[in-house]
Image (cartoon, rainbow, N blue to C red; front, side, top):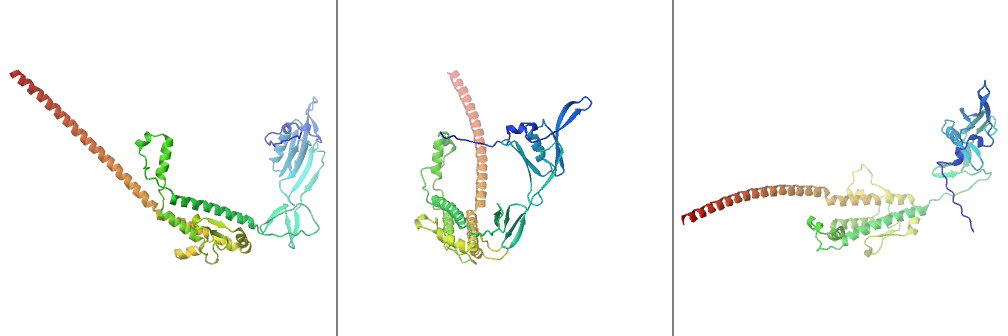
Amino acid sequence: ETAKLSANLNTDRIPGMYATLESVDGLEFSEELIDPENGEEVRKILSFTINGETFTFESTDTIKHMLDTVNRSDAGVNMYFSELTMSLQIETKTTGDDAVIEFENVKGSLFGLGDDVAYGKDALVTINGVDVKKSSNSFTIDGITYNLTGTTNSPVDFVVSRDVQHTVDKIKEFVQKYNELVEELNGLLSEKKYYDFAPLTEAQKKEMDEKDIEEWEAKAKSGLLKNDPAIAKLVNSLRSSIYKKVKGIGLSLSDIGITTGSYLEKGKLHVDETRLAKYISERPDDVMNLFMQSAPSGAELSASEKYAQSGFFARMTSTFNTYYDSLQLDRMDKGIREYEEKISNLEIKLFEIQERYYRQFARLEAALSNMYSQQSWLYAQFNQGQ
């Protein structure tokens, strides 16, 4: 059978970290009497300095306590412990020539070490004939990240090339999202309208369960935007922007391989990856500006001139802003508020009419009651005369 091993790092509680310092091989403690007169209660002390910071521990202290104390100090070092080897390691928090560990045993001995100073070294490298000195083996210059893994006596040649495929993939992701939007808009324009499903009243809803209400309202809302002229204009504007060149660049999306398909697809885009990659490789700045360019700010340009100098993203923003303005939502909101106010006034008026009728009915009932009383009296008088 094949043995399987699963290991997980638990940084919150490593059992060995709570062992005492006496369990660590190589530590030498200095013995001191707590009560020198009686010669009793000897304690074992370990004291040392790192970069001018003094640390003192007893043999009964835990390994974790020592590590936490050192690592949280201003000594500028990190101390680590390995349960596997039962050993300690110290390293600086910085790198390069400024990275120094000055260590001195005060009482006892940390791994038997004597006084010692360890200095870090800067990385020295020559790039295109220019000597470079860095405090880290990983650094970035002119957009290129260098990771030094060793020394060499011979030159290391490399070629920097643009990651064209990454850019192509990002543009394809954008085209996919664009197509999803166009598909949704076209779906609204062609959505079926169910004329037999009028909006439900509150009274009707009380007689139906939630599922029936949900299905009914879905049918009632279907087709509300069927053949909506504003949405149709929005879709056409987006489609036409694909073929209009950006002034100053002389390119359109169709030139670099992003085109619409059959008229049956209603404006969906297709990407010619080979053509797109060619333009990204040969004219990267123009391709970027084709998408990202904005018309000069502060210039007194007409709307058509701004559109001509704008990249595709700016054109999309302008198209959506025009669509939003065409909806006149502010005017619609104002109209809704006016109708709500009219409804409220009518409800008040109806209530007043209702109250008037109630009062009139009450007076009518009183008059009828009085008439019936008089009729009864007259009837009694006639009966007495017979």
